[in-house]
Image (cartoon, rainbow, N blue to C red; front, side, top):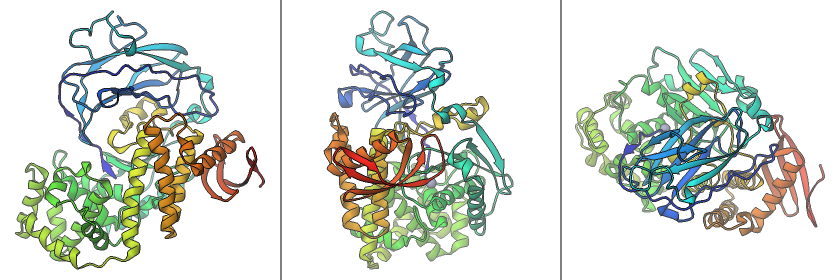
Length: 549
Ligand SMILES: [Zn+2]
């Protein structure tokens, strides 16, 4: 849903938390969560993540991400391998993220671990100033890293290769052995349908669009970065309608083909455009004015100039509802042709609110403030249905929980710091490991299936239960964030999910969704390393869970 943001360079002094980082030895058949690489000193610390996340097997290209919440200054971060005097694998500055108040450095494919199974040491140092020279490394700057033997690789990691196909509208890339390969013809059909729906209204470009289907969840499930990147996976814990997310990204692809490379409408307009053309953000149809009225009447409304200038920093669901509904309002007020002409004629004024204002003035003769005040009259006059009020509030809280989950459990998946290195480059080099799912571990499966259950309850309008489920997830995330030794134990229900997930995993299957009532659970599964779905029935016993069907 989000466009990747350029990160902006900044500078000051980096303080590195003393962190002893350790990747424990792993059993290869169940890939557990990566060890926690966060420094113990919180905001002053640097947070490191290794990729591919979970485990690195000999032959993988190792990548490193460094993040810090306070301005690190201009000092170079250097990374050396195995000796503090080795020549650096890399050195660079952390740069300020466009997605939040943090500084980040992503180094994909730093080192090829082919033939390097065993323990290694990473020396990571801000360098540049005093103490940054070889021989002066405090112990906390040395990070043991284990490279696992290549033949321990899970089956999917062994077999994943880039595959390519095409249809009338598009070129597709996906990975062999994943859900996209299994459902390839359905995906192509859905993409063609989305394209047909969009090009009824938008002029298609001359060249084919490129769509990449990946088996792990990134942010809300889609992004556009020259290519459309769609998360397509069996345990998609967003619970959104896939064709809606697909259509949204396709709108970006079709629209982008009509702009010069360096000029786009402001993100507010671009995203609002995609929501409006799609007919909703996560589902269709979504009554955009009614949903925007819920936002406005609840006091969560962000004034449009503010929103335009910091679109990706605002609460995501509120930002997209406002943007989509405002575009819909403009179409109602000025007519489709004029709004389309305005959209296709971006202004290069800065900041983005000035560009938006200039575009509205040029094409409609009305300033942003005037358009906004007319629109707010519409929103004030709306009387949203109680279900819509619940849905808007729940959807925002639900996706906030997803973003926390991604930050806490699935490094590289959170929209503000996605690990999704140059995909055309990866195809060229045959690199696939960075795009495969996060490790399967009982605790994360429990949380993901709880998220799926919360969405099912919301879809069935069981609001009380849906909020309760979200509360369960929140308690586990709170515990994880305060570094409790066993976060799932923070809630009996989460603990039941975790124990059940663990029993199903030990039985050789991966849970995709769980319906747990009293002492009985129905679990949709697929075999570990396989793609064929099935259903199992489990019963709670004294010691845990037993399969009964
Ligand atoms: Zn978007």
